[in-house]
Length: 125
Length: 238
Image (tube, rainbow over all chains, first blue to last red; front, side, top):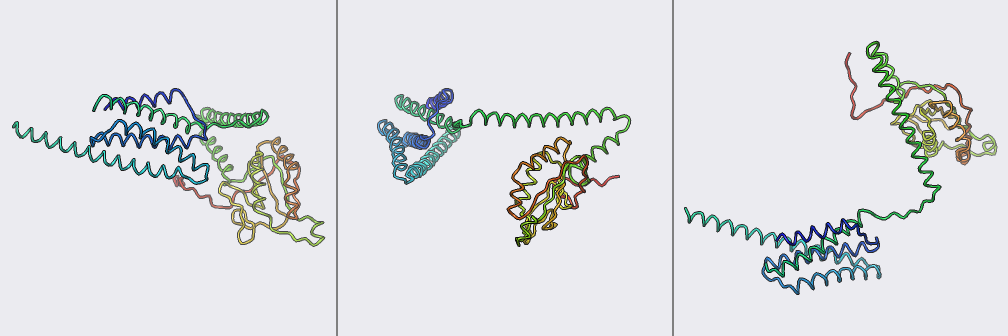
């Protein structure tokens, strides 16, 4: 569990230290891409916890979602409709749902573990 | 968790972290396009220099006061305190203040009146602009038609009448007194007002603004308004 966290910290460190900046025009695309990436990430964690995780789905979902979001934003800019809002809305809602599911699963696991522990202790005594 | 899965998630979180950091960098430092030329930069620099020297003057004055306190602490502490209080009262407008300065008059433009033009109220906006410019050119204390301007003074239109401190000022023959720190500042202000567009601005309203020569001593009255303070209360001791 700590390896992904290390990856995240490493990525942030590298990004901050390299001082890399993108042109302001593409700022919107990157923010949407970040949102899509976060969504995929939490989706992956949820799938893992629900034991339906699939490598192919996760990897393709990651890149496809980013591309789709950026493409939608790009299309929106060119036809004058704020389509990126659609992406933000969709990803935002899913992000919240995923996090809620993760939270519930974790709570259930924790409670199960606690019950088991108390049973163990009562048995031993 | 399988090893492969962990590696995948790690790589993805690395990418996410990198993207976040880049986004953060981009949002934090929006690139400003430098469109100012050397002359504007010099101008800004000279403004800042001026501010610098003003601050230094203030610091020197503060240090002077401290030194005076220290010197006279043993002999006569009250005198120096009274002096400070006097200074503060003059600055706040509770006490009359005098010093070098100049007097301005706003009157009707005779030739226009002869042709039947009417004189309107002096526009508050114009008056506010004039006062702002006076302050900008180091006018310390200002009095308009007998009304001393303090920090809470308002120049505004009340029911069609232009008022200062809530008191209506006349349509014509309004006298504006300005007290400056030094005679040099008074003459600078005088020259600026002569060169400014204020005379034309008043002429649009059929009025004439006359600026008199700087005088070595001008006295402005104390403010007639009650100065309210939200955070301070008067100490009613002995």
